[in-house]
Structures are given as structure tokens and as C-alpha cells.
Image (cartoon, rainbow, N blue to C red; front, side, top):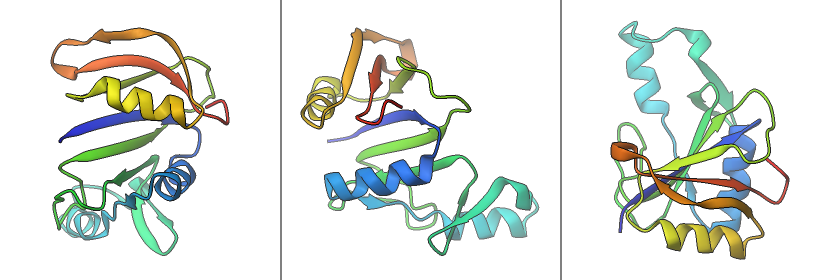
Length: 139
């Protein structure tokens, strides 16, 4: 099974930590990739922050299912994955875009965890499917 859910958040690392614990997922560790990109001059130090002793990309954090394959250099999960991205303002009903083959399963899981939805899933071409969701904290 392979899907990705992208979630807007005002604090991506904190959301990743919370949902990793709630879902028993693992927080992705992009430290090795970041070191390579910094060393090659492909990104600047401003694109990186430290969180819980690891370097992460500023404004992004992701979690993955612990039994799914992942890329050892980037830490990116190749199966079930949630990516949290910084959104400068909390806005109820912001759209979370996915590339999931099992949107209904992911949405059902979110509803069981107390999320609310606005509208119905709708196709977004190659980007996958979109549905507006709000977590228990209103973000």
C-alpha cells in the first residue's frame, strides 16, 4: 500500500511528533540528505533547522509507517506517509492534497482520530485527490 497525505500546519515538527505517537508511525530523518545538500552548496543553512537533535528542512516534517520501505539517504517513506508543511496562518478548511490510492481509508482514519472534513474528495489530476480536513486542534 502506498499513499501520501500532505497537511498544512503552523508547526510541522510538532504535528509530526504528535501524529507519529498517535499513529505509532516513525518521524522521518532527512539528516543525511540535508548534509549532502549543504556540503554541495545546493541549499543554504537558512533552509534547515534543528528539531530534537536532528536537522530537518525548515517548515517541513514527515512521518511514515514503520513497516514500509524508505529511502535510507533521504529518510522519505515509500509507503504510507504524512507530510506536514508550514502554513503561515491557521485557516480552517485549508486543502490537504494527497497522492493516495486509498483516500477513503486515510480520511476514515482521520475521522476516527477526531478530524473534521469540509466537502468531499475531488480529483486533482496528477496531484492526486484533495479534501479539506481540520485536526483536533483546529489546524
